Image 1: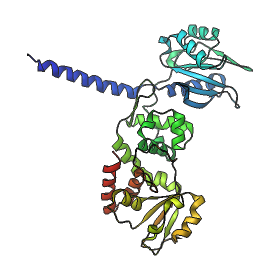
Image 2: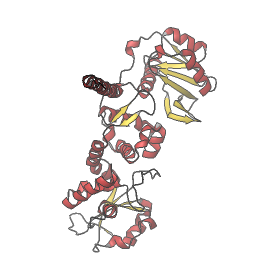
Image 3: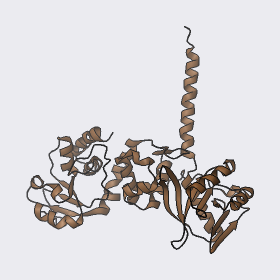
Image 4: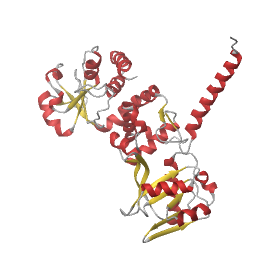
Length: 376
């Protein structure tokens, strides 16, 4: 049998190049969130009406609603369907889809650009619409807006190419932690992501856009096409920023004790606390002998825990042999921990970042073991 190896090499190169080009194009795509935000901004600019987004990618039965938009002052909620390249869309199908999703007068079509002819068709079908150039039809008495004629060159461009810095601010880092802890969450609806990360809904879009710009996330044209491109690098950057960007924000204080084995007689679950740092790492790896402690405790349980552990507040400039840092948990507990988290311990991500912060040689060695075993 004759095998043309030259042809195989050419095909392989072409496939590889197409794959690279596809990944790069995915990273440049204008997202539906971009279109929605730009359309709302354009409506405010053209007509002075401020709409509020109260839901992204909301599940309804076996379908997803792109967004839920509320009129000013807690008014009517509109069900939004968002489309790119609306000039090429099947308008009849869109009208049918919106009517199936929303009650009469509650549907809203949002697009990058809607030409005057299509705007007239939508208005005749009583389908409200917005586009990113300011063209709009809103009929929610006493509010009536009908704007047309704005040109498509004003339409939104891909915004995700701009690094916003949001991902590594305190609230953004909570979202990144949620992604690192549960990679499947990346493709969840925005509301679910916000709930798991314990942040405001609007934070999620900004963080995702920033992660895309930094190359940590790739996003396709359809839903459920987000891909975590570089877990290791994202973990490195998160762990580096954690002590001063997030942990410090939730720090309760530094405490000490004369008993180096103070923690061995404490059952953390009795006080709803979690061991972090050296104690957690020792239990995860069975390698390190803890000296200092990191304890994640809710303030409501603080008094009882301090009494049981016999810890006292460390004085400023005091020299002590045992340091115990108390930090308030910033995350929401979840069942989907990937089989890694153990009872009474913080997630390995937190223990890892705690160890990295110390710079201590034995802790860094243990951090590598922790990462190799749990953070892959």
